[in-house]
Image (cartoon, rainbow, N blue to C red; front, side):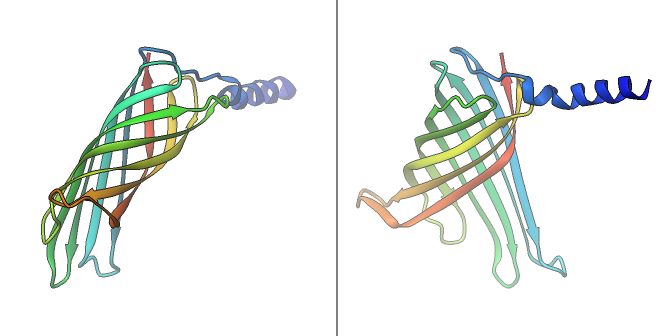
Amino acid sequence: MLRKVLFVVAVLALIPTITKADFKQGDLELTLGGSGAASKALTTHSESVNGSLGYFMTKDLEISIRQSASYSKINHGGDLFTGSTRAALDYHFDLGNFKPFVGGNIGYAYGTHGFTDTFEGGPEAGVKYFLNSTTFIYGEVEYQVFFRHGSGASFDKGSFVYSLGLGVLLK
């Protein structure tokens, strides 16, 4: 009897590895991620949230809209808010449940306390790992190149945007 129970447990543990996750044309994808940090005394802190809604134009090519927002409380510096809204185009490589992707985005970045609102664009890359046929964890990094009031790209004044979170494929 113990062998049967162990066999069933082993088979159930393998289900995420044998479940095949595939994108197909017309699929929708929803992601949500966030982070936070605070000083030991909790006098300074920052929180960040990001999300996206994507549409697969083909099984490998996705177009999406992304939103990110960050809030920071800084001692003697006040409050700082930054955000960006952007459109992205990504190509996914099919490696089973492991789906690396590369692409680019363009959008608008905005904020308070000296942050200059500006259009932005830049490259991005990441990976999605499917836990089952519809749910995945993801990691992504973008570099936002800021465009300052028609004076061209400010490559040295851009910023990195990191995302880590969960996603769901809506079939």
